[in-house]
Length: 395
Ligand code: AFD
Ligand code: MN
Ligand code: MN
Image 1 (spheres, rainbow, N blue to C red):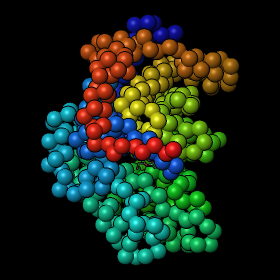
Image 2: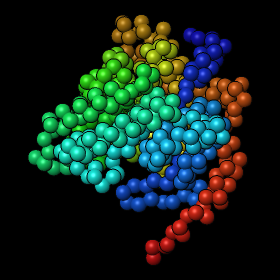
Image 3: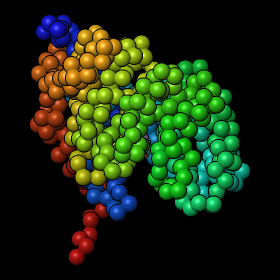
């Protein structure tokens, strides 16, 4: 049994090692396919996104990087690099992963990298190569690809031809990477395609990453799995094979709902974090923790701070699993004792230790309350709200 002071040392070490990237798109108005509810304080410019991200980092201390979406955030590509640099020094967060957007141009209607048109495939690859350039210019390590390509009806596409085109495209992209860069390949079983998605599961992503080259890895979006899937087992396999590049964290009840982390199934995130903790500290540097959420109903800033705090809490719970005591219990199949030890760590209330860590690090002990007291959301709502077109009432 660990002593209180040993536990606190362990806790502080774990919290000092936890950093999580926040998404630029999480501060902008987004919605569902049934419409969006505009928030007056939502960010609509790159500067506003950096400003909001800077506030989250001031409140939490663990979100130093901002994931950028190429086109949404950098319409001029590398031409926007100087602007980004200036915003980085002004707001105290730096550009993080570069997320190419291969899903909304009209020409991508039948796919981008997997489009039957060689011309559109070439343009899509060129777009990926531009994203690599932007990442190099901004000093970003990761180009994080989510590919929405797929089809809606059986018989309308040749799945195997598309695999070949995709292997080729990712090899070309990988060849362009700088020595420190990585290509992260994300998977998702469905949506927007509803019959087949070209990168539908972790096995396909792992194959494509391995085929692309030694600097490619798999990105696990926690919302991109079927209901019964054992995500921590997938994470264990990716850790075992050295193919885990990182995460997009969110929570889900039914599909890719992008709910706030831990709001539906915190125990699952704890189990994922436990697998990572088992790999030891060295693995951490190679695993990008990122949030992929953009809320239609919750306040943008509140949801981001809430998610970061939930991530810290679950990370700390997993860090305090007494793995030395657990191992022999597993070896001798002492099922109830092993389970009680494991679940006990999940049930432990780590909030006092988290508050103490924040106090010791000169951070607000309750970032959500500090956000509310700061009046930041009210201020940006007034400043930005005037830009909103009046929402006509749908009588
Ligand atoms: C959507 C996709 C995917 C992607 C994200 C950012 O489902 O998760 O990573 O947008 O582009 O959530
Ligand atoms: Mn994602
Ligand atoms: Mn998603």
